[in-house]
Length: 349
Length: 171
Image (tube, rainbow over all chains, first blue to last red; front, side):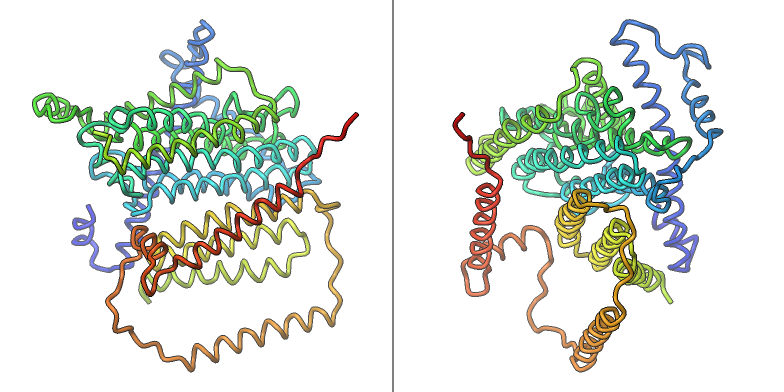
């Protein structure tokens, strides 16, 4: 692709701009479609869990429902409250969606299909996702509404604490595979996914990662940020129209990024299901395209996280912080030690 | 002007503009947000120089850690939404002078210094190399400062716990 464009456009500046535009447009279109699909999927999963049908009127099987919702949001007034700090109020949705978009850059969607092959992919994703909290704090504060502010404060405490567990559970795989690059981690799973060949420490790390990342993206049962019974909507109470839709979209993109990272790190990303040295079996599995493997695994994890929402009751703020600081963090610290021991002794397959 | 130069000037203007707005804004929360832009600009400068590890650490430590801490302390202070009073004139003048002299001094030193390439072989700034250098005990290793810093951090952590701990009083 790069060489083809290079031949078409000799000028370096023009080439760079063209590539930027192409990547940007593809990414945005993909993410909008993704947000549509996840919105539809969430409603269907919710309906499935509650034994009802879900959206079924607009379009075949209700698939156009989300398009109708988007049109409705477009026609709403983009209202800015009088007492709000207008500059920050309008900036906050942009910040939140930008951080969500940045985190998607190093994710490998298929074999040799990646926007940015950065050699510290894991560290990059965790560092960029730590910026999301600033957007939420900004939105909550600039609304000058006490409920928004409480929601933002809760979210700050929550995201800052759960980041630690996410980092530690990712580190255990980084230790085993010996690289921070997402591509190398995927390649290291060519003879079996880490969750299968990594024994108990990797399974523990996987479970901790799923719990902590559900908390990090503020989804139920950790959605105290927008606990509607107490806070009428949390940090996004004052937002309406497309600005609100941007928060919603950022939530879905974050959900996708988190699931994609979990699929890449623990379930092999685009790597097909390989078992040790069974070449015949491995060869059959290679016939399934790598993108299907990647999206299959990612949507499996998204499905699990969506089910959480309708399975567990919401935690209280003290329970939430206890869970992180008294259980998850010590467990993941011991787990990192176990993984290190395993990597040194070569106990994994 | 090549694309690379254009990107450099964009990054530089974000850093400098963010810095100037951070000190001139009279709403303290906005000042923190402009500081955030300036710090992100510095991180993107590291990315521009292909020094990815340092860039990611810059984001983790400064953007994800320190700015969040600053924002939290702003939330906890009284009347954080009000505009601050206009600074006294002589204070503003002397601050401007201090900044100007510091800039002049830095520019002077950069002008006088002629950058010569080192004779040593270049080392790729990968995480592995940085880690090995950090923990090596040979002549140019950094094990001693590394351990001293870790002791300092441990002391700070224990100090925080001692300050924050609640001693149960007997009823």
